[in-house]
Length: 346
Image 1 (cartoon, rainbow, N blue to C red):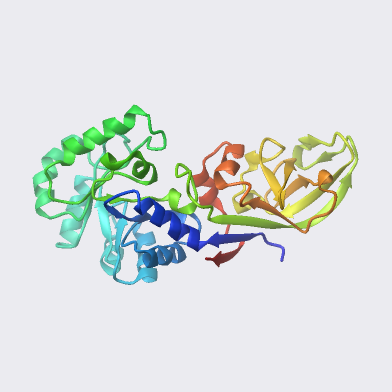
Image 2 (tube, rainbow, N blue to C red):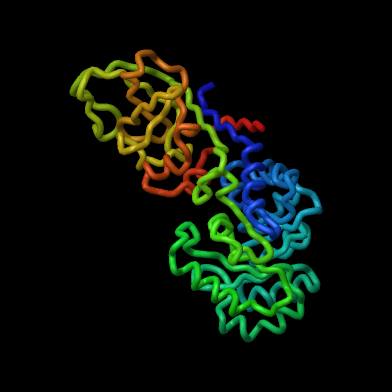
């Protein structure tokens, strides 16, 4: 097989959800947007539903329709982008619950789908989605009379527990929503870990389910193994890869593996700046630039030519790889390419 193999441990996903759920006294949902953070939303959501999850969150109505087809009619599926122009059919047919972000979305929803469930999103300082305090004060009584299924906001700095923004947003959320007879949600993964004050009625972890920070105790979910296409000798003074960015300082043995930035392995992690691949427990440096389909690895010290090398697994997490590339684990996860042979295991 010439493609790399991405192994996804669905049992670890379920256990991560159960571990986060055990930290609260409230309902725990799951964010499975971006195709389940790149791991396959239908598979991931069915696993989480079997573990006990009953509330799911996606980015768009199209994602919601895909999820409804996978889950059937039981669970609630919330849509972060709300009710966009053109979404009415998908919301109705998928029995989705849009999280309305503005007066315009509120009007669109109640006119197009009167009596259909909805939630509300508040802007508490992140300034992406949600209603401003002034907008909300004008709409509040009308919206609450329609009995929203959920009122939510999103923390900007929850992965930094001591950041003052957390307490500021918590206070703003309380000011905007205290006294309303509707379930509330403020915490994603980071907020869940901040403690009870942030939990309200529902927590909605995302990246922590899939082995990512800030849930440091999460079980690893993904393993990525790439086949070696060719191994060659390189003399001292010769270069490897585009731009002559790596020059051999000694006679070297270089393996070329079948994976590259077209598969979500970010170009910036190349040329020995921190990312490695592994042969069992042995770390081997990436040398030269990561190219579209190929990565070159110095296997000189291994003492033999490997058939496969591992990029993600027990020795290197998505966050380790992200640090080497100057990005975050979210980007690594959601970029994992469609060319991989995907294998699901419990």
